[in-house]
Image: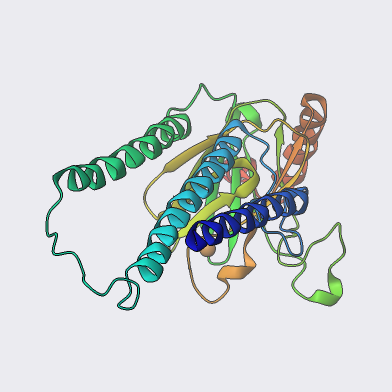
Length: 284
Ligand SMILES: [Cu+2]
């Protein structure tokens, strides 16, 4: 009787805790395309892939919470009910067929309900829709270089960190995230990102887009995103690449089609002067 009451109280406490946790997390997650102070959940998703990652993550949190509480309950029952004082003559049972079949099949079923959404998500990430634009990101020690191919204007530029110290940071220019030249892409367009590296391993990551792909010297990796909200989304190199690994952020600005066209025209001029492919052609 006492155990039952204890169990019920514990369950009620756990439920309250969980509800509080989820509410708090949702409130804290309402940020932008960058980490917020005291943020506990993932960054705001703005692509279908990122949303699917977040909901898969949430599903797993509920599942592991249920599994952990179940195991905890079993442990508590055993400790209380089967200690030497409460249960002086222990049972000598060594086998129980039904129980053994159950503790094999139930975990298998749990794995299946994890595997199905997991494979669905993998498919969404790996089967790329037809790309509207292609951007190539090249990791260098320690900055990113971007190339827009011929049909987008055929230019390339380097993107270097600008705000390294706390004293230089403002809300618009976050520390260790702000760069001199940002990547600009149109909203609601499939952007294929081709990723490689010039020297050592890096990784191209933008949490709000749900993308993370290794940048490997001599190999071309790719990923894709279709951003559904205008704004600025930051990411960071996510493969330990050396001394200034923490100082090579990624900044992507998602804009309207019109603003993208304007930016392309300006960028073509600006980066041609800075030494893009146009300059190389002229030199020959
Ligand atoms: Cu790196």
